[in-house]
Image 1: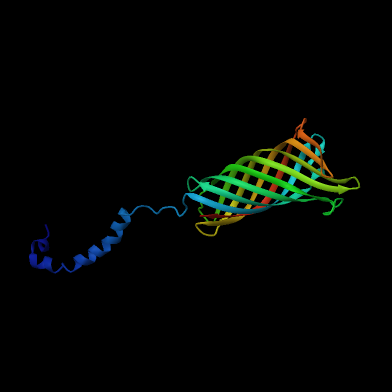
Image 2: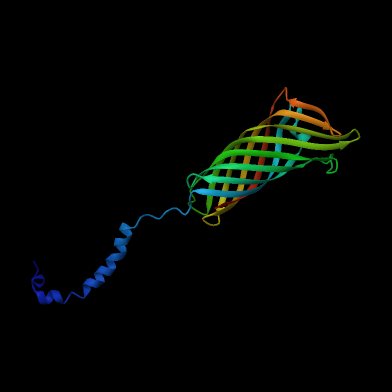
Length: 228
């Protein structure tokens, strides 16, 4: 053993270093014992608002194309979500798209829109950077109603059915732990099962569609989501 360690007087000359060594050891000890940082995201409710443009494809009924009924819709939407985990959520969605028509049909002659109500799930990937991608899928109810006026009078055609599948994908800019905004795209496939026609206020036809067929909606847009 070194001679200076056996000499009490020499040991006392180093006693002033002990508090300094203890202070230097505190940060390392705290780092070893402290728990890892929790994710800033949490479970709970979230609300969202969207604005998109919907473009139809396919037939509303057999040999009656969607484009002949409506060219497209400007579609605001609201969402209510509940996050079971910081990344997985169930969603209720409501949308009403205001109809847009071809140049052959003016706003005074043609009006209408598309009502959509749905439920689905979404998965939000952990945000490693300022951008966070997400995907979603769901089902729902859809109603297309158009009103037109001509020399025979005013007619209202309503078709309603199911949205069999709705797929969505988006890329959110993470503004804060609770606020995100970004572009998204959705594609949906549906089928109308019921149809009704009113002419000048009189019910002409109401019942099930005999020859059903698939139609599609493609909607690019932007979404704002706030976690409560």
